[in-house]
Figure 1 (cartoon, helix red, strand yellow):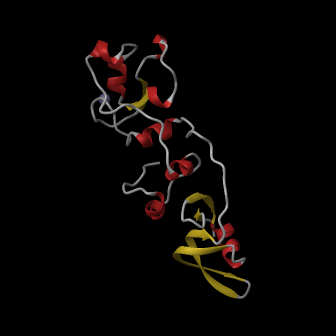
Figure 2: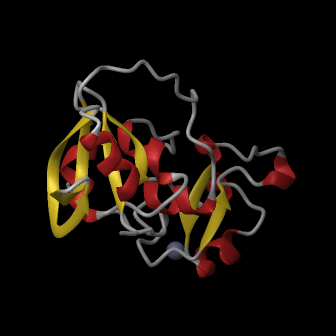
Figure 3: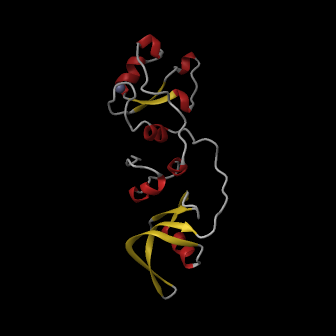
Length: 170
Ligand SMILES: [Zn+2]
């Protein structure tokens, strides 16, 4: 049993990802209930249990979260759908909208996914210099799904619980 299980709070709010082994232990201890299960079974304490994909805590826990999602290449690609914000092509790089050489910051509101060609063409010029525009201003992502993106790929079977309709490419 090497899978991963999405752990929901008692309120069904996604909390984190735990190992399936840990999820089974929580279910056996009545600390969590299986919400969605796999076809796989695990034998434990003389009972047979379906390996859970999603479990929900039976009691609410209060958890503090970091205020902002950490900025990473993968997170930017995920936010922008792995698409170049300038031409709609396949993104392969990160562009600073206001170039760093002009005082642009390495922050969520100044980084976008871009293809190599647009990135190279724009170089250290501004959008005004280029006569380019953005479809919408870049923003720091928020929401339950983003808390989980930092450390692992998202199982498609978790999407409904994470408020995602589209698959997230990892
Ligand atoms: Zn492009």
